[in-house]
Image (cartoon, rainbow, N blue to C red):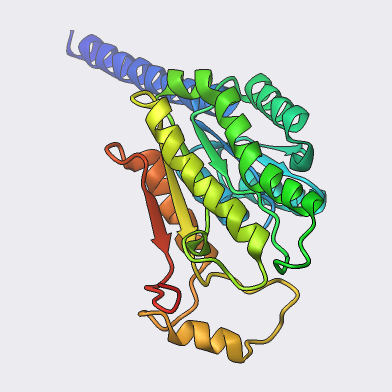
Length: 281
């Protein structure tokens, strides 16, 4: 009898182990094969710099990524490959010319929902930036700045509203500290970013209580890609920050993730991530 009991105990133990292993493998398979169960974030302008850092930050939190780009397909593919290699999430890439924002944004939302099945967070990062001195600025340039830097974000918010409301999600808009003070030789850029800041606060009102809407205003984060050295003007900017150093794209990305995923009682706010800039106040 003792031997029979011992054999039965061993048999039950083996069956229990097999059952546990089967359940664990099933859960692992489902997690890998059903990306729709994960939160999804749509990031415009996601192929480089702040957009890339933001995509990686969300992926590290287990979010699926819908990555928008305009011309930089190869950069977008590299981000997609990096995310797919390092994280157990899905990353899709989507082309869109936001200067033609109505069809582009409709295509973006449609592709995102068809490929991911849900949308939890919208990050409006896409932007154009180049000098437009006041007396040289053209109406067509103003039109372009407003479309890419503000109106595309508005249209995306409208199109994403049902999905974001269902998810009790959030929108984060990338603005700029110079939206409050202006920047010499960049009249149209700063005007468009001021428009985006106002839009952020308005959307927070009209989309409440279902969707939170906030903004992040970067300061001295990255010099233009074509600029290989730090000149006198850049040194002056660094000296004007309380922290006396250049910020990073990752610092911006972490703030964006916080506002989207963790700041459950913050809406209508714009956070400056600028190292304590004082020269423009």
